[in-house]
Structure formats: C-alpha cells, structure tokens
Length: 202
Ligand SMILES: [Zn+2]
Image (cartoon, rainbow, N blue to C red; front, side, top):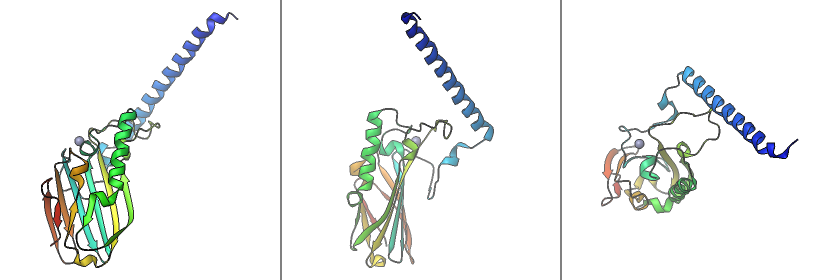
C-alpha cells in the first residue's frame, strides 16, 4: 500500500468517529427529552426562601441538642463567577479554590461563645464539574447553585449567642446572605451584608 494514503485513511476514520459521536449525543438528548425530565429536577432546594438571585446566598442554622447544622446555598455565579460546567483549566482552578475556601470551615464560620467541633461537612460543586457521560446530563442549565453543609458538635450549644459568617471576604461577588436560624425555643432571620457579618441567635 502506498504510504501517502495513510493520512487520508486516518482522516476518514477520524471523521467517521466524529459523526458517530455526534449521532450518539443527539440520540441521548432525544431520549432525555422523550423522558420529559423537567430541568429543575436536578436541584434540591432544601431551604429556598426565594428565587435564585445572583449575589445572594441563603444560610440556615439549626441548633438541636449538642448539634449545630449549617446549610449554605449560593448561586454558583457568586462563588466561582460562572454557572456552566467547567470548560478549561482556569475554571477548574476557580472551582478548586472555592472548594478550599468552603472546606476551611474556621475561615468562614466563627462561633461567638461556644466551642464547636466540626463532625461532618459536605461541599457540593457538582453542578459545575464537567461530565464526560453526556447521557447523564446533556442539557445546559440556565443557572447553577453550589451548597455547603456543616455539622458541628458544640459544648453548651443552647447558649450560642451569635456567629460570624465570613463569606464576603472570600467571595467578593457575594453581597447578601439571607439567614434563618432555629433553636428549640426560638427562631429568627437576618440579612447579612459585608459590613454586618454577625448573625445573632436571639
Ligand atoms: Zn444564576
């Protein structure tokens, strides 16, 4: 065989693979639409106070016995600056940075008058991670959210008076945190802004 033909054969082969790939993607999109899955099915809004607003996060603090559970939901835009699946190294780095900040609990949450120990945490940035398996989630969302859940064991949790939420320092796009809190005997809500980061729990 003439070796000069090899690049041509190679190109034909690659084009064939490409066409097959496109066909597969279309087929999976088709199946997806046929199933009629509503878009928002993928999100879990456990504490939604209102619709997704860029710059505004929602925080829930629940004090129960010795435990303090804190849940944060924020538009991805306010945490990493975009709401699509990461497309390059730079966006992946932004996701990693955000994850580090949210994981370093002592930097973002400070308890005023009780000693608390982190027992569990779950940082969810999945909505921004690239998915090689396009069948699983082939459509593009208009918005994306990130969430963080922290569970603390505290001494004298019921005496907790306030906590400082240091999110604005780390996420400059974030301008407001709407917080609701709940103890066995009381509940309340507050809006935190960069110049007022203390959440009073009484
Ligand atoms: Zn959005």
